Image (cartoon, rainbow, N blue to C red; front, side, top):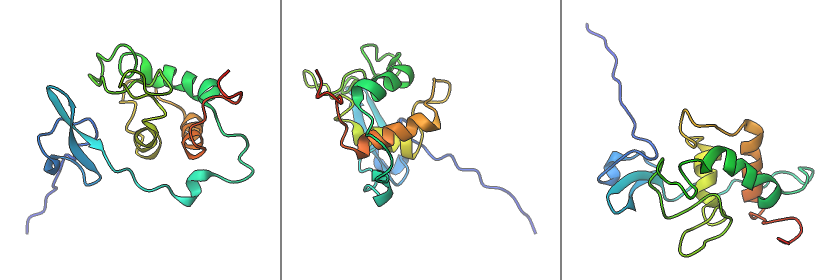
Length: 155
């Protein structure tokens, strides 16, 4: 009787692909630029009842005070800001709150941020500065709380 091991590599988010069969079940092969397709979360899971937190969770984090500095530290450097050389993604920027000139901002990408940075923790990629567990929880609370801009209404 013979025994052995079977190793399989499961292509994850950001993995180059040509069709959906090359991506994990919860991902789809999508066009991310004129010359690139990759596995990406297209239909993130529905929010859980626990995603909203509890009544005693305190104030909802805001973009201005809590989330913008977190994005600057973990996401913007050379990937999801003015310099996209690390990601080649030009359809969104995480150094801006809302869409500007057809380029989505963090508010527009909230479901994707939750799926990638909070739920699966596949962003940022290994080797990049990553948010702490507490910072990932801030992201979850911000998204569950409706992605507020600033406590003062943005002024």
